[in-house]
Image (tube, rainbow, N blue to C red; front, side, top):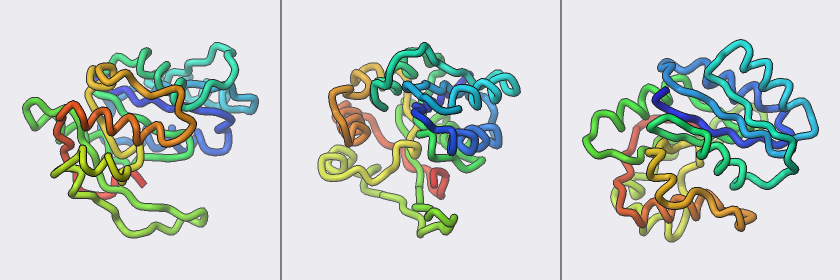
Length: 202
């Protein structure tokens, strides 16, 4: 498959189905989802196993180890990924149906592309959506932006899997802002961040 989507999941029984449903609804289907069970004690594993039986693109990594945190879970997923491209989706988030088609389409259309990012918006508990947020500064000066803030949610990016490995994955010693640290290190490589317009990652 072209795109590997890594989903860390700890006691995500209330939300994981919606996240996986959003992948099944994608308009381009050459993806695999790697759900990394991070020490769950609820129904997360059973739910993911049920999805995997219905859709072979969904895979569960669950070996009974205790919770290690989201960075370690993502790194396990990166190690298991086989796609050229890589995305990260938290178990309580989802993607709009054109996400895979438009993000991969952008990356495949630009010679030497390694990273793309899209627009996003906040969604309230009752389903109301805020305004579209699309940072043009990330494309113009990614290192300067990520040195100060992280304006794109983690599920708003797709990057080359080799690039994720080149920067060493996620820092398992960080208890927060691990995604911000990761994108700072990606920006330091000089890779261009290609913008994909529209709200694909609410």
